[in-house]
Length: 117
Length: 110
Image (cartoon, rainbow over all chains, first blue to last red):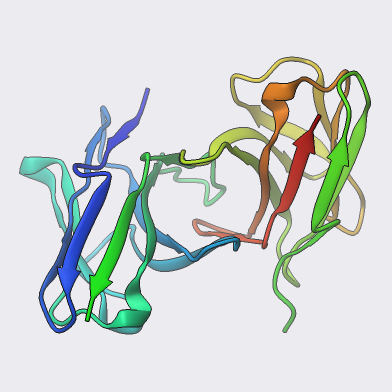
């Protein structure tokens, strides 16, 4: 079974500071990896994903994440935080499937990011 | 291009009642997944529909059932509601490896 651990349920940064949200996964084979963002009272928005290829992936709003197989990690970063980045962030994994269909997402418990002026 | 839509936005029910939630996928998407997100938690997978059949199911009781229609839209039904069923119910649609989420339906059980 796959599982996701997000270290730190709450991260607080100053505006302009580096954002680092941690995600580690457990899986018998490297899974597909995703970061989603959720603003209050809204659904989930895809930030970025890793399936195959380059291990450093860039997403929307200046976020990026690096897949490190040896560390089973997929940490999310942004060089300079903006007030509008305040939200809850979820890391998720799904199994790879050679047939192109896709299965369930397994989510971490989320990290609430607050940005201080 | 319309994204994933869900209805209703909010719903209040009492214990023991039954509820139906609806989801329309993004244009061109053939797979619909449903998730339950309790307050302060990550979403939990309920089940996934593809070609009008349940393809995979999470650890939810049989009170939770679903359906997918020929136009790929989907319904989630919950019978004999419990207080613990209060949550945000999220629908996601996909074609290949990425799921796109709707805004969710907030269900409150009193």
